Image (cartoon, rainbow, N blue to C red; front, top):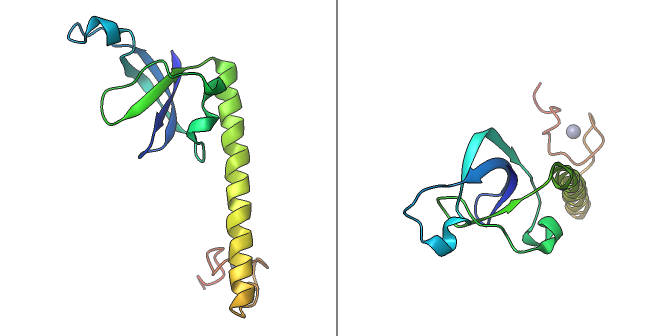
Length: 127
Ligand SMILES: [Zn+2]
């Protein structure tokens, strides 16, 4: 089953899970315990708790550190990927704007190679 795993410390990931059939779990939590299957672990960067599906309660959790798991449809996975893309682009724009303002305040000039205030990470200082 497709799922989104939210952790406070390690990020948000698109994963595949199945219900963990371990009989050691208490009956009242057993159907909320999942384990990962397959290799899918795709980071969904820049998402927050209030970006989780429909803001509905989570479906359970995976073993390990504190996390929450929502079972999601392929459409919801697509929407989360798009949200990651949008929020990452906005975060990059904010960082670039901050760098530009800081550079202006400190009297720097734009990079001769890329024209932004890149501090040389565009490769301008490699040669
Ligand atoms: Zn540059």
